[in-house]
Length: 137
Image 1 (cartoon, one colour):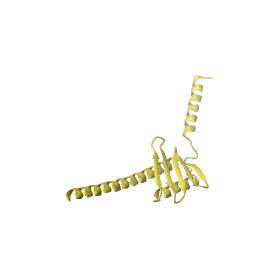
Image 2 (spheres, rainbow, N blue to C red):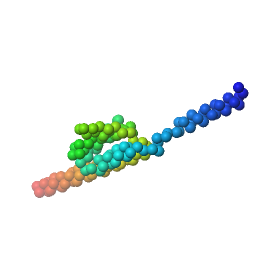
Image 3 (tube, rainbow, N blue to C red):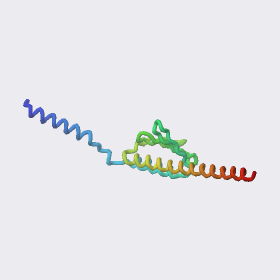
Image 4 (cartoon, rainbow, N blue to C red):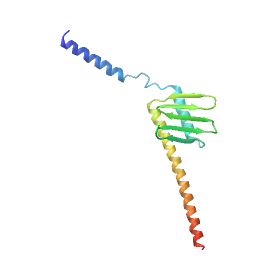
């Protein structure tokens, strides 16, 4: 076999391996259950009774809503939806996962800021009470 023929075969194998790595037939196709899972998460995030938790070391995010009886764990592009009768584990692809994490983090930050403002206003009111008591002496 000639050297040029060997180089052509190597080049062809290299091209096919690159093409195979970049080819993901299911990337464009988002399953309907993935969209449904995404919508469930959005509804639970926007619900006022939902509690938010984040585990910083594992990067897991938790949503717990006792009034609806739903508990959700988000980690590694996976969403686990659980209640007392069922449990689903759904893998979210690229953009949906990124959007869900952004919305979760944004809502968590909003709630944190609201709580911080409430605490700050309570401290301010208490300080005014202390000043009035001291002033009345």
